[in-house]
Image (cartoon, rainbow, N blue to C red; front, side, top):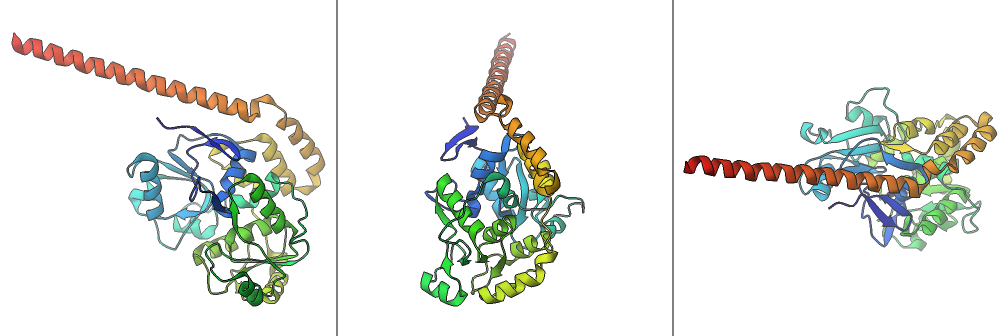
Length: 350
């Protein structure tokens, strides 16, 4: 029997929400974002999918087949993707595509690769973090030139500081706790500048309106995803060698950067989004109406109909009802089959 709700450090979450190495004691913070997004943002699903992908470069034949085998034991069923990205410039097979439902995509390169309409909503869900986390200045990175390597970069800290020209180094790998993830967010939001080999480092820096640049120190992971995100914010996908080059590059493009509308990203989510988050997104997208909208959002947060306990109680009750109906149908079919066998046997004996 599949569990609908699972217990996590962040609290309960729909067990169908999957991400890379879910359940591991340490996490790449970008992969770990679904925990925060689900806790702060989502209620119950709009679509009865077998799995949900809320973040990441996970749209690829091999990954999709693997996800389906993991959840269903075979390559069958449906995966819902919320503003995720492709891993490389290779289209999906028609068979694999039939198992996918796309609710927005990360960027225009993924959209065009999947032959989705030009009106498809673009934007990585990581851009939502200012709505989900109230930042505090972190003394380790406050106002400093910060470097974040890719999680698989094996250079020593001293070597990375030397070649990057940064003041401090922060790593994308965190202990799998809410506190650790939020602390890393504070470090990114406090940086004077972020040179990053982690794509979600760039995405969060962009979301927190911190200057940033893509870092190429000989380890660029999945180039397609960087180009896809860069195109989504109207920025050229240029990789720099150090902080000095990064600052020069960012200064030349900063005024052209355009972040996707957060309200639209939330609107296409395969889960029902908390109304208070939609209001906060509207305030973020249109700052002139922020005070009134935030006040309404605070009031919505207090409604019992959107309390996490009430939502999960109703979901679990609904899941129990569905299982009961399936059991009744199974037992009825089994009894009919036995009755038919008995009748057939009786007729043959006559």
